[in-house]
Image (tube, rainbow, N blue to C red; front, side, top):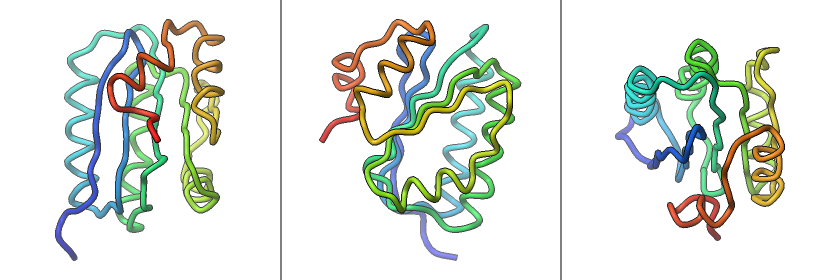
Length: 142
């Protein structure tokens, strides 16, 4: 086991939950993230919501961290998640995301390298969100 490293940032715009992953993740950091997400979901009463996951600065994760993190989709569904949008930069990031997504039929998934395409998907799915709003909170920036 190694010390916690990597970082995450969380924010909410309307009924879109934003998460940004930075650096390489281990089990300890993932546990902190999961606890924080659980707290947010239990304290927000969204009928339905979307996730915008900014993985453009993510450096992958240990197998244990990935296994724990993949359980969040089911938790999200139980709390009204209907759309899962993931933005990544590299094919390695894309591969790890695609390999570990649970693919729950009640959730619409969209994966892209384009922040603009991610926002278009969310707005076409009924969310009131803009790229400038997202970037002003420090997500999907260069």
